Amino acid sequence: MVQDALVGEYLDLLKKALTASIYDQSRWMPVKRTRSKLKSWMIAFLGKRGFAVLNRSGYTSKDVFDGRIWTDLGFTMVGMHRLDNVQTCVEDVLRRNVPGDLVETGVWKGGVTIFMRALLKVHGDEERLIWAADSFDGLPVPKDKDDGADLSDVAELKISLERVQDHFRRFNLLDDRVRFLKGWFADTLPTAPIKAISVLRLDGDLYSSTMDALQSLYAKVSPGRYVIVDDYYSWESCKRAVHDFLDARGEKVDIRAVDWTGAYWQVPVR
Image 1 (cartoon, rainbow, N blue to C red):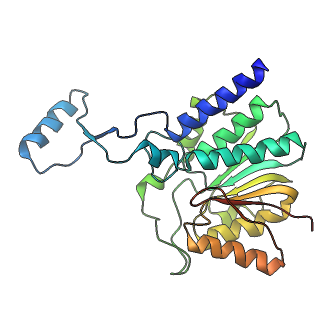
Image 2 (spheres, rainbow, N blue to C red):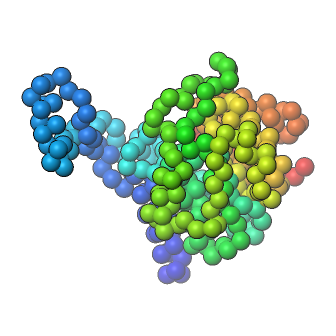
Image 3 (tube, rainbow, N blue to C red):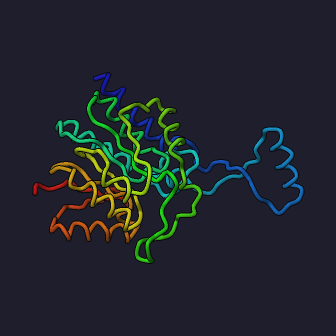
């Protein structure tokens, strides 16, 4: 019982660290621009001496908890509810001894896949792999106006493979059980050496990215396993891709809400 309590406390603390909800989120941020000549001089003067001039930011801890902002301090933007959902799905397949690896398509800073690796470690699973698929260079340019919003030039979304690997190391969770698939989904996923999937988490935002992941990986998700879609309620293009894919297969699923944007379902018996 003590061991179970310690595992729970570790996972809760890890979730708070990954989301940065452990911090006071009405935090201080570096000031980079100002119209005041005096302030500009002070920033330059202090900067050369290793100091940072900071300014109070406007978002709240609840914004971070709910996964509504991109925080510099955190390793994921999904918030606590969606991490709780990952934990529920992963622990369920572990408890039922359902085979299959854990996969996320679109990892940003790696926070969700870091959490997946921690779940396997604390529960003593020594078989499954974690697959982290991403361009590691931001989002692609949308194919057309129906593909979704163009975020391809957003620098904050361009997190390199080396940075993500370093984030795993910070939590002592980088090992040979974590596999990285670098490149656009259309190029990497069709030939990815993934045999079976027990939890598939999609976070590609765009219609094309969501469709690419489903077309390449869904057949490897056996009945009783889980599919999670991060952007289902907030990106109409993503939701449309999910339903176009399922309709084309003639498959009816019970899609359940995770929070204000995330959704998931259990793959039914075919």
